[in-house]
Length: 147
Image (tube, rainbow, N blue to C red; front, side):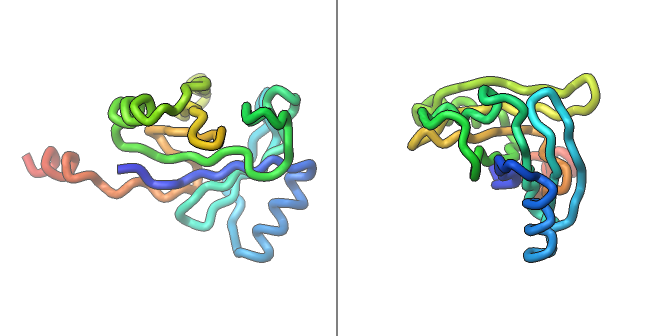
């Protein structure tokens, strides 16, 4: 099972953009980042994590869709309960593996990026994003817990 739990926006002004989503849609700030890739604010509505980012380099902002660095929707992500199966399905569907990102030195966060249909970038992660609602406990996990 996979659930949409992450959307990333690229903006020139993360503070102003985040304030808009907080004010208009009652989103809550759940974190901030200042990594080598981007500076930004993480928002949540209780279910989904939305990263409002200003990428630090043209390379980081490039969605690999031939348009170069652009503002707006950058990528979205699925929290998956079976990364191996999801990788297999992505490969069978013709998705192109792009890269893996890990911040294991400071967190358990890890994600993989793929290029899907229409060159749309997407992430998969087994550990989720701050402020995103965790996946429901799978049938497999429920069965194990009952043993």
